[in-house]
Amino acid sequence: MFNFVFQNTTKLVFGKGQIAQLQSLIPIDKKVLITFGGGSVKRNGVYEQVKIALKDHAVIEFWGIEPNPAVETLRKAVQLGLEEKVDMLLAVGGGSVLDGTKLIAAAIAEHEKDAWDIVKSGTAPKQIPFASVMTLPATGSEMNNGAVISCHETQEKFSFRGDYPVFSILDPETTYSLPPYQISCSLADIVVHCFEQYMTTTGQNRVLDRWAEGVIATAMEIAPLIKADSHNYEVMSDYMFSATMALNNFIRMGITQDWSTHQIGHELTALCGVTHGESLAIVYPGTIDVLREQKKDKLLQFGSRVLGIVEGDDDKRIDEIIARIESFFKSLGLATRLSEKNIGIDVIEEIARRFNERGVKLGEAQNVTGDVAREILMRRL
Ligand code: NZQ
Ligand code: ZN
Image (tube, rainbow, N blue to C red; front, side, top):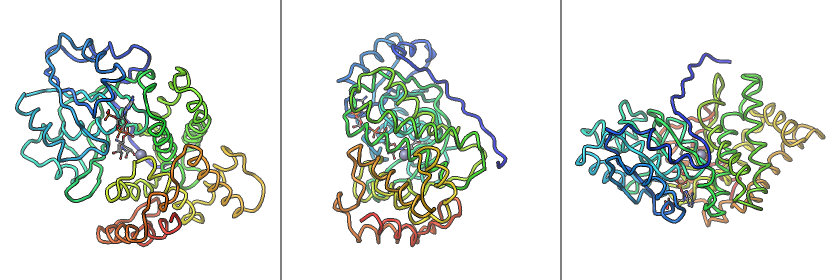
């Protein structure tokens, strides 16, 4: 286990009816900018609950943060926040609304800087306080200090780090209105978050190996249950909790990680508009195939502990593990091949070119360069 410091400062408020807690969670003297997406919260009753809880607070609203939040949209919210002199932000919606809000919080605190420059620097040194009512379990953004922002002008998508949300409210009942495709993308995102922190080498943190395996096994177990009934409170609670625990910096303590699938997936989103979770379903089987020798022991550990694959030689078992992971994504109804999204070699070449130009070296061995990314994607045509 490597040396590490762990501190997660988000207060998690979980359960039915908990949106009402906003009233006491936000100090009455704060002027709050509430941020929203495209309107799902008006259709599922979340907006009304928020408005009732904050009826005595000074609030203004910003609407229209899109999936894969664009800096071009967020600059408008920064402008509004500065004009109105807000001193706190509340994101109400999915990961995109919250990630966008994390950038708004940074760009208000450092208004002399352009928002995209903050993203490209990789770190927000200062942010005004922000919190969330999360309605889509997927990104873990509700309890982590990362955000992923897109720039339409340059067709780029990058992440930055900063503060944690002051609090996040997770009411599983808010997920009842999620469209099946969005649930599928989120389940893929949850398992790949675990995989990218877990699938490196064995024996670095035995406790967290079991933890990551547990979250992945849970997501796989509940996927068909959610499909059968997405209004089952207990199942949707497990779903929501899995997403938070997959990416709140918990399962990465003291270990190496490999985020190459996310980085390649972000390029597919930036260049071709592929939804985040589906981009991972396409790329991940290729990553573990190309890096199968380097990740062999961990793949075998996962195969035997989670999938019960114990027969045959190593290569045969790894083939079966990769096939089972791909068939899990397929069972969610997601594309797992680039051709299903009409993406061809030209895009693969552009991603390889960008990575090589940026000098990208990803993964636990820092060996996933543009050329390796090309190899991964060529196996996913
Ligand atoms: O915009 P509205 O109308 O609210 O609708 C949204 C949106 O269209 C809808 N939705 C959200 N909650 C709903 C709902 N519809 C019905 N009922 C509900 N309860 O779902 C659509 C997608 O929302 P979005 O926020 O884009 O999805 P998600 O939460 O998956 O976020 C994806 C973004 O997060 C980034 C991704 O790259 C992508 O940009 N990520 C952020 C991470 C982080 N902060 O740590 C890590 C992740 O790996 C990921 O990269
Ligand atoms: Zn993700």
